[in-house]
Image (cartoon, rainbow, N blue to C red; front, side, top):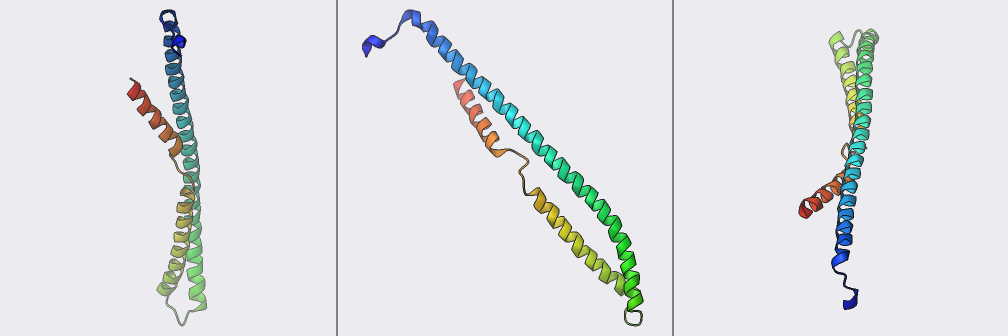
Length: 137
């Protein structure tokens, strides 16, 4: 085993080997940083799409709810004229629309919970490489 020791002229090879390892580690770090950036951009795109759908749906639902509410209030008042005053009809229809709106908000919240805007695995690997690099420096 002692005859396998390398001295003198092989020192340049050891230096180039260590330099190669450091360069590979830096390249890996750059690639992980690029992956992290790409994943964050993709998640932000999904978030933007979900927010756009939510906002558009809310506006359309609001306009529809107002018109339906007015129509239903007057229909209910027409059907129950001797029994219910107009304010009770507004309260009944308004309560029903509120319950529907709460259901839509709960659905949108559940949709947002289906994905994580930050890539946990890539962030953890990136953190691990940063710690390794700072220890090496």
